[in-house]
Length: 225
Image (cartoon, rainbow, N blue to C red; front, side, top):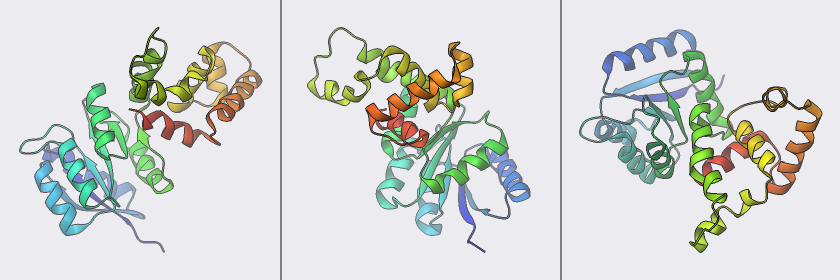
C-alpha cells in the first residue's frame, strides 16, 4: 500500500478549513490525510518547514502574509512541495502572480469537493490544475489578444508569443477549449463542426506546437501567464 498524500490546509476561514478536512477524511482517507491547518501564510511557511507536506491547499487573501508571498517562500525553500491555490478570487493578475511564484494550480472555491480530490490526485502526474473558467480568461486576456495586436514592440514579448502566432484563428479557439478541459466531441458541438474535423485540427495543433497530448497543452497554456 502506497503512502498517503500528506496535505496542509491554509485558510483564514477556519470553519471552511475544518469542513474541508472532514470531507477529505470521509471521502479520500484511503490515499490522503490532512496533517495540519494554518490560518495565514506565515503559519503555512512554518508548518511547511516543520511537517514537510506533499501538497498545500493555499488561500490567497489572508492576514499577516498572503498566499502568493507564502508560495514564493515555500517554493524557494521546499520546491518539492506542490501547492494549489484555493480561492474565491478570480482576478487575472492574482492567478498569474501565484503561478509565477511557484503554485502548481489555481482553483476556485466553487469547485465541487469531488473535483478537488481529482485535482489533488492529478498533481502526481505533473498536471497543472487550474479552474476552466480561469484558464479561458488567461488564454484570452493574457496572450491571444496580445498576439493579434498590430505591433509588439518588445522583442522578448514577440519571442514569448511566437509559438502561438503559428496557429490559425480557429486553431487558437480549439487550443483554448482544450486547455480548459473540453474533449473533441464537446469542441465540435461548440464550434458547430464535425468531430473528425476537430481531430484533424487538434493533430495540426500538436504538430505545430511540438506537444503530444492535452496535458502538455495545459502546461503550455500556463507557462506564459
